[in-house]
Image (cartoon, rainbow, N blue to C red; front, side):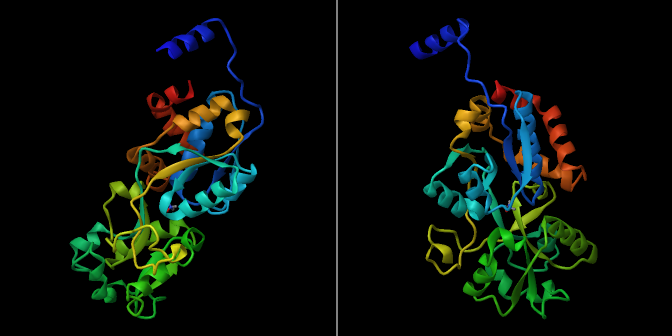
Length: 306
Ligand code: TMO
């Protein structure tokens, strides 16, 4: 109470707030839609406050080292399962700070479009043990007679999924293939549907598929240390995780107002799903999608920029 009184007294007497630097805030763009649209949403918020912004395409793992070094200012979608390791590594090296957590919880996991279950193509799903008996319904010309898991680009998880298949004793029935990009996952969903054939793909939530019917496979639960990189045998699924924001440690000093807005902002599952859908369902350009989202959701974000 006393403190609040002091603060309003100070601003009433015209003490200037710290002003943001005119140096550009560097925002990275990666290879999935919500991340690129949200880059433009947050960049647009910063611009509305009088800041300069630059977008740079960046590798989604290496970016944490770039933030630590100051080549990139922020990361606005730090997904626990895929990037938690790189995020904490950079933090322990020094130079990267945790700028808070979005409201949305996340899952990054293999799964099937829900119609695959409804059509009886793998009885027993979403329990992973069903995969022992249904691989014949998931073969493709490149899968050597095995069922195919279509993983995301290898830059996201390396050999996490091939190692998991082996650890679960499924490697004689299933094989992992890597998609060149996220678009290849959505193309596969559409063509499997058209051909009425089973498909298992890597996917995540929040995403546009939250609204189209997608079921994640339930693997043995994730525990700290269950992955090979953390000392385990890799026979576990992905965590239900957080979605964080990260920043270079100087950002609060160079751009105090923008940093304050960045640390306050928090998107929900629905909002992030909308950002992805503007591109993947409505086929908009990422930049236009960001502008449209900002225009239609002023009530969501303007308070954060004050
Ligand atoms: C990092 N991702 C959301 C694509 O799983």
